Figure 1 (cartoon, rainbow, N blue to C red):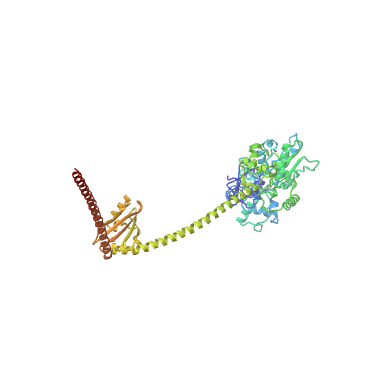
Figure 2 (tube, helix red, strand yellow; figure 1 turned 90 degrees about the horizontal axis):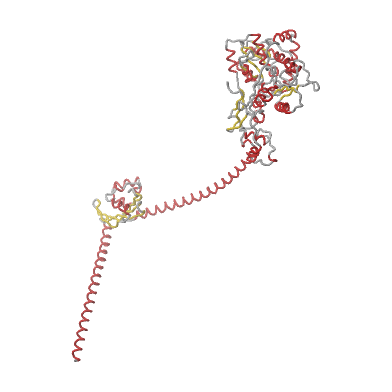
Length: 619
């Protein structure tokens, strides 16, 4: 069967109200929503009524009941005594009895008779007190809380079944053991508690809350105007109808609980419930039995229609019981009590210690320090997290039930720190953005300058009489001027109309002397003034490196064209003259050097001759 209490993560807004009201630490905040821990949950349903977002709900058993009613089995309804406080919009109780029958129930009984029966068992406990104080076991949330969270008090639980189980025994005895039972109540905890009695004569097949009952009425279009009066099936109760109100159980058997005479502490509501159990366990001179309601009486339980007023409902229950007391056949009631007084209404309990381990003071102080609450004055606690103090929050954190984000002040500090970091990041972002804008402006300026330079270069290249082409390492054209395109012919001119400057074209498919460009790309050595034949023309080609092994440029002149031919003839004539002049100069130099040597030799001979003649004349 599905979990009793569940939370819808999509509806949860993390108000922590559910954590605040849960008595058993059965709610964990994880993945940014509340999660119900079924092993720890006592089914009180207080979180359901307190969640304004309606993010928490209890298990709906309408379908199970409808299937039972559609079967061929006999089905009896047991109505919680709080029903008169629920149906204040129905003019006569006999009408809501008839409405329940209209759903398909074979029998509609009232739990108040069973309350009368178990009240006598509690009276026996009080009258035969042997020094061991008891805690009433009529409230399933109370029983579950003590079994799981105060296991040392299990021995003090009164070994008496709750009224709905006692009434199930009554119905089975009177209407047949095969009769299926549906309990209609305000109590959500009863939905799971009834499972403990499956297979016994107190077995109950399903539990409907009053809210679910109203939904079935609406679905079947049943109103008080569609039915006639109908009475509850016997046996009928008397003062047991006061059960959903504090003191109601013991008033059923006229147990006086005045301040001086009484020895039973009767209380209701979460705060009183927890405090009374704590004092019962710790204070040795309390000397009182406990009769507890976890809710503020059954008339305010989560299975009631939301928004009801406690004291209005209380007065409605009292008024209803008063009317019933005046009309009931007391003699028949006594006969019925006598008939069922031998029923076995005893029960046992099971201690399941789910108390969480208490962390050390060192660990608690460490967590508080991590939360920024190392000082005592910072640990007063605002309660926003769902825990009454920062210290209890730290304990719950160490027990794996909370995260720091639950703490309001921690979240505020974290948020402020985050805002500071965000502001710093925004400032850096703004600076980066400003720098980027300036960079973009520079880039645009450089782009415009480059474009203008490129346009200027292209214009200049197009003015040249020689063909100019630049290619990359793959021999693809990077740039070509108009003269180069005209040299290639009509096909190249048509292509250039689609692709200006033949950009991207493969040079090897345009000219047959492309190997000159390949050579310069590979070697890095320029090739200048090489004449090549191209079609009917003779071209003068000079290829030079622009970016070594990556980009080279070529200047190509058609020697056949008149202007180039004239220019070239003049240039080459000048080259020839220059070369001849150099040759003449070399010859002249050589001739001059030879004449000088001859002159020196002759002068030397003359001087020698003159010297000889002078010597002979002297003799």
